[in-house]
Length: 286
Image 1 (tube, rainbow, N blue to C red):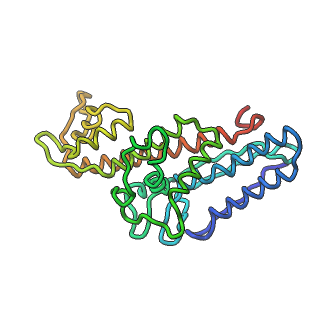
Image 2 (cartoon, rainbow, N blue to C red; image 1 turned 120 degrees about the horizontal axis):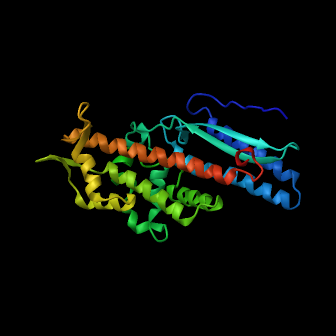
Image 3 (tube, rainbow, N blue to C red; image 1 turned 135 degrees about the vertical axis):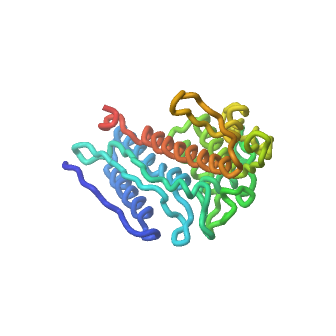
């Protein structure tokens, strides 16, 4: 069978996300109807994993916009592999162009990524680490305070579904905890305030600094230096020079750090999902 492509395009709110889910559901149901023994059970697992990846990707890659309550804010290419008999072998996602600006700022009546609001609503119930995340209601965090609710959507139940899907895809407890810690750290970065000091700007809330460093597993001394100074290299001597930052510069550094952390987390999530949906006999594993 030669390769085939399905291109789903359209303006915001046209239904691209829903169309993709319906096509994936069709392929999964097609495999279920073929049935058959132990091999069929293995294929069922792959098909279910493909479908169960959707709530995770939507949580971390979708957001409410003015025109669409569940708008995908990234591009994706899904490579679905079949064997010579037409049976599903694996699925692999390639992602690109995540909207990083939405992490730190949204327009009126729009939200950031669903995962932030789901974490705020359901984090308390996370075994072992829930209380250590230090999260409050979504409206109390700078990155999620513009618009906190979507009519008819329960962020706590969506969080539970997302966490359950991670379990279905084989995410370990350590992996899930790391994901939630990184998400919480990004939210706390948005709450940081700075003030002018004698030698560069300083972080106002020392306890918030400690919480972020705890979640990121970094040293406070190294963390605070990033916001106090900007590092330059002398083009002639190659010597590293620390120049004091102004408050505006420190604030921009904070936003850049939040964008980088979240985008790398999203890239890792896509990679991790691909590890689960890659079949044993797929081309990716050969």
